[in-house]
Amino acid sequence: MKILYGVQATGNGHITRARAMNKALKQKGIDVDYLFSGRQQELLFDMEEFGNFRCCRGLTFVTQAGSVQIVKTIIQNSLIQLYKDIQSLDLDAYDLILTDFEPISAWAAKKQYKKSIALGHQYAFEHDIPKAGDNFMTRFFMQHFAPATIKLGLHWHHFDQPILPPIAETHPEPANIINNKIVVYLGFESPEEVICFIEPFNDYQFHVYGNFSQELVAKSSHLTHIILCPLSREGFKADLASCNGVISNAGFELGSEAIHLGKKLLVKPLKGQMEQLSNAVALEKLGLGTIMETLDFAALKHWLTNFEAKRISYPDVPAAIANWIVNGIEDDEWISNKELADELWGQVELSRVKPTATYHQKNA
Picture (spheres, rainbow, N blue to C red):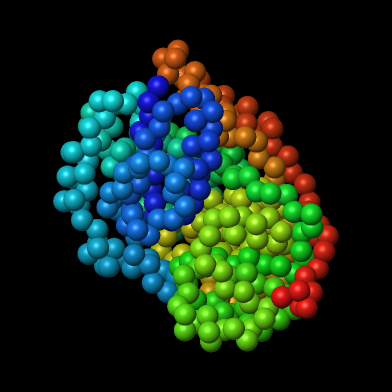
């Protein structure tokens, strides 16, 4: 069996989900080729496990100062190149197309009448779930950006809809969860503003991930409670495992990992982005996180001292999906999304998490 797996590479969340699915698909003996779009290939990192993957321009959003820039987004994207990439993608060698909100593979499958499965958080929005910033244009965009024969939506809760639990990447279990260790990943915000935002809270140890200039690193070197960390998958996993909380934008995949590990969440959704606005509402509705519309000192202080984390242990969703794919292709018949969803949600466990240690400044 051979699959083409198209992955939206604008953010790291889709790629993280693809890593988990890659392992599960390989365990089933499935031969997978990968196509990534939405980011220049030289800006991708830690991609060795995907082999000789293909990279296309695709479509992406332009953001600045924590909000989507509509005009710049229109200017930067090329519909002509998108059309050419869709037309030139030959799918004859594949038994199935799998797309994680990736438009080139999805539309090529539609044009060539290939069976396709869409897997991702965005497909949950076709159901009755918490939404914010929703309108006709966003609904049209969600439904037509990356279409598929079968759609598997993912979310932190089922909301009585036929959607699946999230695909949460596994992390090493730390000996201790450090009470005042906080991971910060605000990729859509100015690094200078983020540092200014957290600087007054020197009773906490902030591990801030992002792309930082040498000038900023030097300027911030005296702040012993703020550690600037370059983007690193393994380093991030280790810090996420041992921290008590996460401050981030309202992306789905990082939120899923944090919830699965029992980390409290403070999120600043990207302005003008329906998915992130809706994610923030869902987190608050489920009691899994706190929202701040701006980099709000009062919100941060209250969250640091008052919010208590929940842990939701999600099952091995990638293995279940991989098994579902194999059985569906072999039998030429797929069990319904609802049956698969009910099976997985029946394995979900909820618990409270309490930190077991405190970071001391002398350990910096």
